[in-house]
Image 1 (cartoon, rainbow, N blue to C red):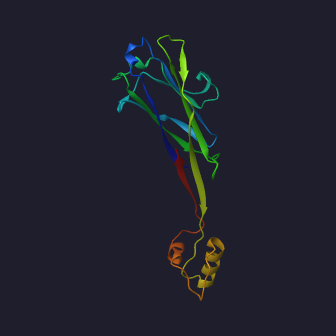
Image 2: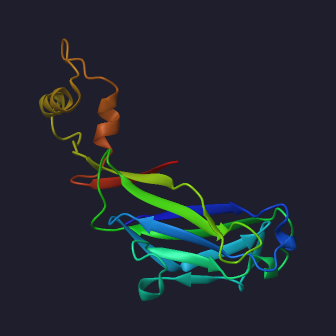
Image 3: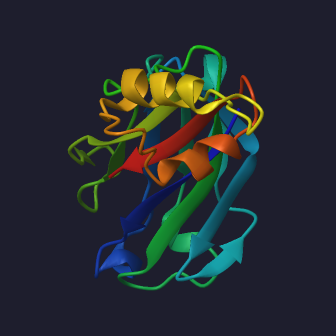
Length: 193
């Protein structure tokens, strides 16, 4: 099934370097139709890839057991290249799995941030939840070959698309229908932000 790209973006405070320590944790909760791929996580500070200063947490180590995973920065003031107002981006992928909801309900993915809210380490703030929905649709396709006469095509066109055939005229869609493989179930994925 399809891999879906996600990006979490967090802007650090303009007075970041005045903090003795600045903790930031990004909490991500995915629906049952998505499977997080931890090996795909990449973290950037102001567009530059970093490989340390953060931890990806799953399972028993989660601060909130309702999350799928968390990305924790124990002290963002010590990240390579960080400055006041820096932007952290976490890029990762999840796979649509067999539990994916097909259709308009979609597969939500919700994230929120928890951060140092003052110069006192115990004072924490929380962002509002931000949710994106991954939509996937299934399309059943019927094949009609040139060897099958116009009558079959007319029946298919009328039953599948409410096209009326007048005086044996077959619309141009005939050529498109004829080139599709027989019995193919195709799934398309779209993300609504």
